[in-house]
Amino acid sequence: MDDNPTNRYVLRTTLSRAGHTVVEAEDGTGALALLKDAEDLPEVAVVDVRLPDMTGFEVCERIKADPATAALPVLHVSASAITVDDRTQGLNRGADAYLTEPIAPDELLATVTATLRYARARRRAERLADRLLHLNEATLLLYSADSAAGVARAAARGAAIVLGAPAVASIISPHGEPASAAGGGAGGQASSDNVADVRLDARDLPPYHEFGDRTGTRLVTVHAREWPGFPQGFAPRDRIAVAVARQARPAAGVPRGPRGGGLDPDDEQLLAQLAQACALALEALRSYTESTTWR
Image 1 (spheres, rainbow, N blue to C red):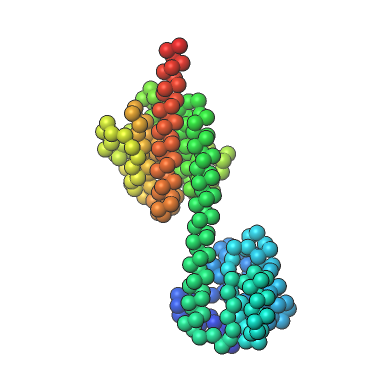
Image 2 (image 1 turned 30 degrees about the horizontal axis):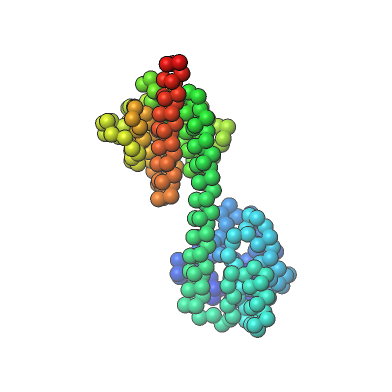
């Protein structure tokens, strides 16, 4: 954000040559409108302090006051507001860094890189914390299910919400019967209410039989066509990420991960934990069923 075309050109050229994508605005009003209408927020805002319609300090305060943009890092730049009081005011009013012009290209890039490093780490931590909360909620749903079909529906719903993508869960009941459900909808966003039963058998999945009599959890990537009955059009691509879990008895929780198998390490851990919780819930259901029958 800078009302000086020459300054914008210099900043854009420096950042673009370093591999960044740059969107420009010549005043605060235009910049705030860009942020409001953006489908994907930028990762950092470079804001000139002296703008024609408002100060860069005001722009920064508005960015930080809006929950949708509060986490957006703001880097102030200025050729005139260069005193200690100016820099102090900028930082106190929400800026994450403050540079005075003329700015050496290496200094600008190093500051942007450092700002992005901390911002990305913060976003990852917040995203993981949010998903762990959803994982806890999904686990409670699993243990409250009173049937194999209920476990499958809870697993599908939980995987869709935890991973933020459509998911499928297929389990083998304590009596050896398959039960499966799809959560999130084909190609849609995950929804706690969007869960449907599907005809799918975990025993048709090749990795299921690789367990033999062993217990534990495995993460694998397979093609949708390798799993007979997999809902058509449900996977965004051919490849799907699968977590297979077994306990003492034949039981498998098989939620599908997002982006056709493109899971990051955090997603993989969450998927594995959810599959293990699914298998444990089935084992608990088996024990409860046997004790009730014995009585």
